Image (tube, rainbow, N blue to C red; front, top):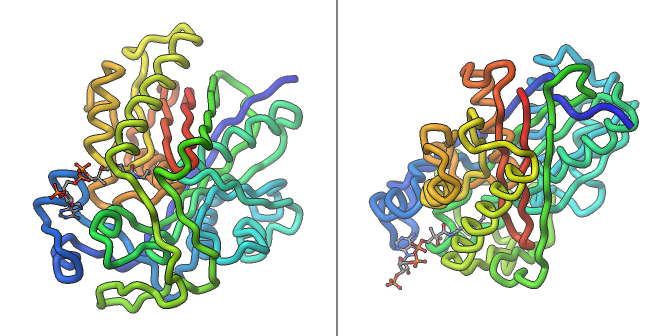
Length: 334
Ligand code: UT7
């Protein structure tokens, strides 16, 4: 067995409609100050017509493929991390395959909530160990606005939509996935759940209006015990980071940048403090995009990449936590 995953192209897509905290003040009893202080979120993106999960995923994929210099026909596999596909069947990944014309690929979704992209990346890495020439599209894409109860101030202020993608292939050098560890604990499922039956085109909201609870999605909104999720997220991601670094003989000072799941700026600050990582080394997009579940990490990765924050040889940490519970950490040489 040889080979490990390396990323040769990144891309992302954000819906055009920006929903501000001030607009949310008009639909629930909240304030810009509360949202900003408790979460760090100022705006989030809301998908509209033509911005279904698979379409956003495909747009992110086109950008990643362009950067990678890989055509759709060269793709061997497509994995989409999502909890908000248009339909249960076919998978979002199959719709992406159709949309981009990746006729030679096989495609499937991974349901691991906010950890979906990292789970998908890990699966890609396992394939590449046996078949390093494979070209794999790994995507995180979500349309959470469709599943949010827009009357519930505890959750509706937190989430946003979007997609991020990577083209991954076998590394021929030192770069790529160095180590990873994934976790789940289904016993804690009731602390964060979503019992929606996905409906195609469910998410559509009109531009220029504040979202209203979508009639297709009644009874399908998030259930969340926020304080507990917060506590577990910091503790489990912190332990996961420390265990992986110890196992690999790497100190936190060796890390150039942590790109975490973006759920709450206070979670990220607490996590950084817990593992003794300077917050300057934590990449954040939460202010602009809120929590876009599986999409948040690949969107952040693409932005960091395109801003030139990722230098060849940099040591990166990907850290995620979400419903299930699921969580995980990946050590990556850029
Ligand atoms: O990707 C994983 C998914 N989810 C998460 O990671 C979420 C993790 N949890 C969190 O981020 C935080 O727990 C929240 C941001 C959800 C909540 O922050 P908190 O500091 O834990 O607040 P809280 O739930 O303890 O609520 C404090 C108060 C409550 O009022 P009372 O009972 O003290 O009178 C809430 O009713 O804030 C109230 N509140 C709000 N007030 C204004 C809750 N939501 C809002 C709101 N605007 N949007």
